Amino acid sequence: MQAPDPGSKKGPGPARFAGLGIQLAVSLVVFVLAGQWADRKLGTGGILTVAGAFLGFGGTMYSLIRALNRKDGNGE
Image 1: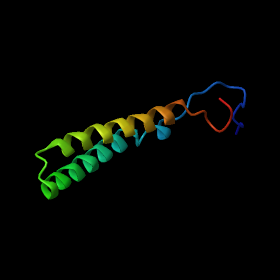
Image 2: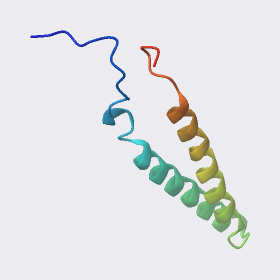
Image 3: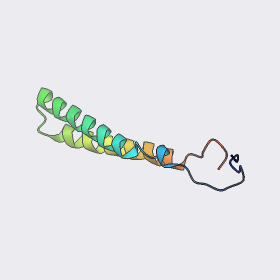
């Protein structure tokens, strides 16, 4: 049994990216549902649903870009 070579250039494993698509979908659904709920309560006719969709998508994309640009813990 050999120990892994610390000098080998190997990218991050698939487990690091496994939940990113689910995170995008779930946060978008949550923000849209919150916008729909606020529209019903305030009678604003759908503007908060659209704002929630943009806010959820924008915030999630910001988070995903930061996660993808983050370096691995081993200095890569």
